[in-house]
Image (tube, rainbow, N blue to C red):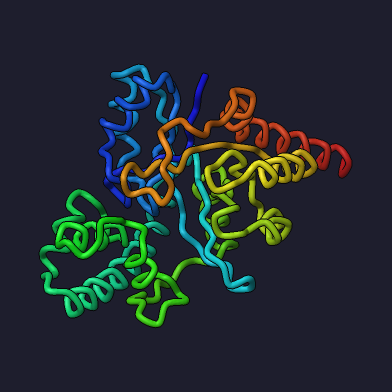
Length: 293
């Protein structure tokens, strides 16, 4: 059983639609995926319906954006199997509004710097719930200013170290707040690709916040880091997942769907995790009551 638990669609910053991702999964021999669009759960129900039609299990998921103010780092947390998706929708909507404001500022800066219109840029985000950097870069590619999404021009426009960047601040929830909201929705909180934003040194603190596990198998985690994360998760008795962070042509890395997956043993642990926690809570409550009596 192959399970890719980190996939993005056109609803956020992926280049492929939900049905196409499911078709790719089917033809690749992957029978379980999770659609984890950024701060967007809109594709969950549709994904499950289409997946059932093709014999693909689609696990409800979303990638929540947050920021570690203490470490000064971006942190993304995968939320799976929410009991109350509406609770997740609230935090997603808040971030989406902030991202829309930032996107509009960046779009206007690009439109003033290059001879393209805002409408031209927006047209590249058709079908998405927001305007992402990939959409802006795609518009500049179509206008002939670059032949790469993630080349020198991208660095010039979107690197914090660049004096010519067009970045606009986006207020994100704290890591602690994000994990709290994920748990409040009855979902499981997994740290996304810790190798991407160098979140390793902060792991202990995130576990104190209630983090349930870590995305161990990822294109952003090299072999050494993967081994280190496995060791940490074993010691913490934490969940381990894997996923390709698939974005299609909008991905920072060239990666195919299913290139990184969650082993069956760990998929089973993820799927039974909430029931196990509830049993443990009931047992603890019973023991507490017996001790009081």
